[in-house]
Image (tube, rainbow, N blue to C red; front, side, top):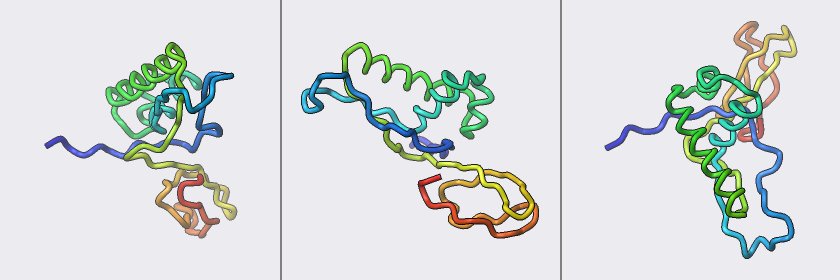
Length: 136
């Protein structure tokens, strides 16, 4: 029996979750599903041009796992482009969204996960605004 997957941390949702070839009806297209962790790996490695070690640390996975996630993402994007498929970005299993929170009292900044509803400042103990589940 394989061990369970570790949660992968992502910094938020993409603003657009569907891409498709122009002028082709959606009903006639095959689609490729890109998971949120694959999208995050593409964003960190290709858009922000981070080294794999740094990006893996940010996603809280090993460098080897990050490489596998990124490889899978590259394969899916290439498949969609080469074969003219629609691409959907959706939440996959084991993904935690993280967000940066700033304390209004002392200005300290830290990260919270999507599991957190109310953030308490680790610096001064002040309760800060609500972080909505899944909407960081």
